Length: 443
Ligand code: PLZ
Image (cartoon, rainbow, N blue to C red; front, side, top):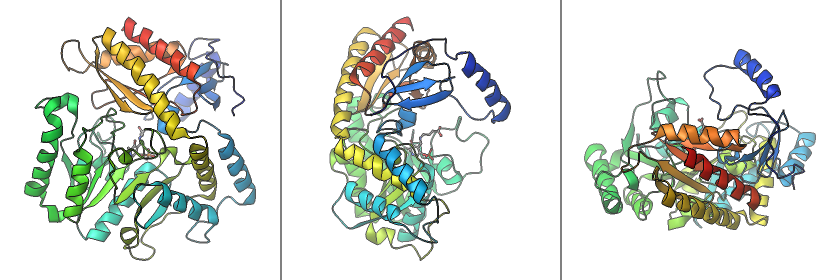
């Protein structure tokens, strides 16, 4: 357990004087191109709390963007990392292999959906996992086209920028982008042109029609989709959409790739969000929550697909670092032994009950959606579905000034997403929701 007291405490305004001093150095030394969700300098973190250099204790409703699902500096992660750092720090798995890498692959093969024979590779970041999943799918199918979706987010490298939907800030001025990426309409119930009630039946038909008529199914190497879209605004497709896509992929020799970088590792109340409808992806990309805060990513999938690439065709100097692998084994053990999937479901119920009560009171809330500890509200201009990013800015600022860190998302910059560490104490969670309620009231 963390030694950090699990209480919200403000001793200065945010940012306090010490944070302000260091933020000046940040502005002087760090590229202005990097964003910053909250202007404070973190000194320690654990449970549901971030402590800044001025001694303020902030409630963490973002978990470093769905990374510290087991909490910051979780006991098993710290112990494993310490032992590994003392044993050795790096050999390069392609030069001289070590057990930790193999054990993480075994864990991924065991935990990801499906009982078929699976194999894995390890990498450094979510984007790198997506890059490799696409490389593997292209090599296996000897096809080039990759299908992605509106509102999708897959990373900031050149290939994954092309796969990511939103121009600003991710793509503006960074082209040319890689060819053979085709974006399909997303089953986004709130904004489906024919209305939410028709989204389930229409969206799958539209996408399949486009794949068949515009691309030709036999030219498609992979369909890549987030089971719940993260950066795009926690968009949950209606039941049937994901299984329908997976079935179309199987029938047409297309590799179905689930990007579970944000949804993975107990976040949605199941180890992986694909499980919700029994979808078994051919390949699954993981990162973020895999290693309790250390940089690690994976691609896991059908052994015959993973083994189809020529020898030495995949790799990288740091991929599957022994330290990150040790952390991952600690994080995975924590998720399993502390039943964090169940905890994510309980957190989800608490959050969605609170958000739905707010929706009944405040007409700027257009929709409450999500699954497990991945919940969001989409803000609209009352009376319709026109996005309301102005309200979002004011709500997030209010929460910050009250000591609650809340993240935004969404193509239209109008979604508040709640994704706390799964070890957040219930009183902190309820306190954050109560402050969010006040923030919406003042907006
Ligand atoms: N796939 C579904 O959510 C990362 C991006 C933060 P990396 N999302 C947070 C930012 O603004 O850069 C993400 C994701 C999904 C892939 C990625 C990419 O993961 O580890 O950031 O490369």
